[in-house]
Length: 222
Ligand SMILES: O=C(O)COP(=O)(O)O
Ligand SMILES: [Mg+2]
Image 1: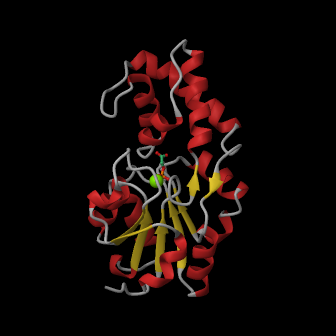
Image 2: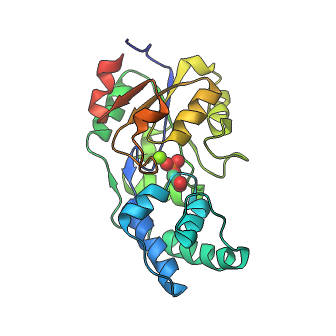
Image 3: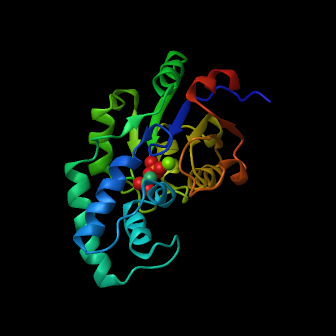
C-alpha cells in the first residue's frame, strides 16, 4: 500500500543516516581501558547503541542490556566517555549509501525535514555539520531537547508542535524499536531501515509500517 506524501519527515541519526559505531566504539574502549577493564567489540557496541550515551556506557560496564552499573563506577566512566567523544565524534563515522539521494528527493518534494536523535546536542550538531547533513534539517531534536528520549513520544511531539501540524501529516524514518515505539505513541507512520542498530534484532519484528534497505527506495513508497 502506498503512503501519503507527508509535510514533515522526522529522521533518526545513529544507524539511519550515519554509521557512527566506529567512533562510539573508540570512545567506549577509551573509557573501558582507562578503568582497567576489557575492551568491547564493534559488534557489542552496535547492539548497545540506541538509548542515549549514558545507557551505552552502562551497557559497556555491565556487558548487559538492562543491568544498572554501580553508581560510583558510572560516575567515573561517563566523563571518560564524554570527554573522548567530544574530542573525536566523527573520525570514522560515515553517512550510509543513498542517504543524500533520499534527502534530496524529499527536499525536491518540498517536504520539511527534522533530525530526531537520542544523542545529546553537543555531539549531534558537530556530527551533522562535519558530514554535510546539517543544512538539510529545518529542526534538530536531540536527546536533551525534551525531558524524555525516544521511545517516549515527547521528542516527536515537540517536532509536531514546532511545525504546527497534526501527527498524520508527518512520518518517521528510523532504525530501532525506540523509533517505532516513539512514532506509534505519537501517532506517526514509521518507515525503518534494515541496516541500522536494533540491539541485534531484525527491525521487522517491531512491526514498522515498512522496512527499506536504502534511502533510494523512499520514492517508491509514495
Ligand atoms: O545516542 C543514541 O543512543 C542513538 O541515537 P539515535 O536516536 O540517533 O539512534
Ligand atoms: Mg538510531
